[in-house]
Image (spheres, rainbow, N blue to C red):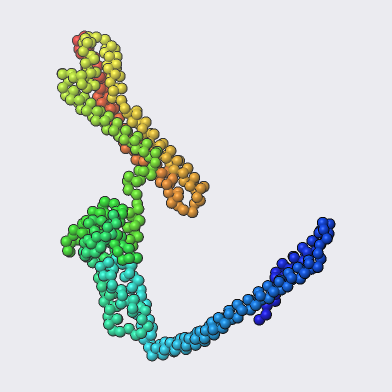
Length: 462
């Protein structure tokens, strides 16, 4: 191969010739140059440029020959390997055709049994999938290995394999209804892997020391739930673990094999529910505490006052100033028997009016708190809905979890307001009823005393 000389090799000679041509008229103004010398230099430069070009072409040809010498054996090796690949592909096609013929011969030989053995393989695969998702594997980790071989084997199953399938199926049915205790490793909540005694209730739940365990299908292990369900379920777990053989007890199982238990432990407890109410919820709880304490104190005081009034009724001869009735009757001690009845009535009215504020103390405030509680719950509802609409405007309505906080606050504060108002109203009713009974006794005794004085006056006049 003879490559064409590159144009760049002639660039120095051309530039030198142009410079010499420009130098002749410029130098004519300064001095008379030696033209023959300049021409000779230009010729020598042209000869040198041609010589360098020839050397470059010779070096290129030499390198090309070396590369061509190295390329030729590589090309031959590639051609040889391509022939090997073609041979292997042809061999593969022949083997595939032979395998297909063997499969067809096997199907022809099986005849009516082909469908039967296909059903056996399908049942083995389905049983393997179900057993691999069961926590019984913690106790028997290798019980599905023969099922995997049976499901993937294209040969006729051996009688031992069919018997093994039947035995595994019967063992799985037995495990569905048994409560068994065995030792196995458990990953505790702190991350420690410890061998402990586990109680298994069928394939549904696994218990350890009154706590529920979560079965990890990926690595066939048991992990203690970081958060356990409500206390009543833990008591049921304790009862199952401590039950005697044959004893009938009430327990809790998860027929979904972990799904329901996972949702159950995410259910907020009472403290978390109260926290969802936010600031308004805490204010309602504070109001409820103040109202209930005030109501209980007033009910206790009124009940004690009523009890003293009744004792005073039984012992009307000895008047005591520690009860309203005694104080009302003592207000008439300075009035003579023959005094004006109108003065006596005014004195009794004054004494009763002085006792009424004492009996009514705290009851208006209790009624006001009972009225404020549902209004504060409504306030929390409005705040929660505002937060919900803000979440919708910022993030859209695609993820309900983003709106859960506002909705929880709206509902929880409403419930707290109603829960606070209802008992406060009931307690106010009880306290007000006690006050009314006490006032009725005072009025009855005052009227009876006036009637008695009036009768005594008539008798004395007659």
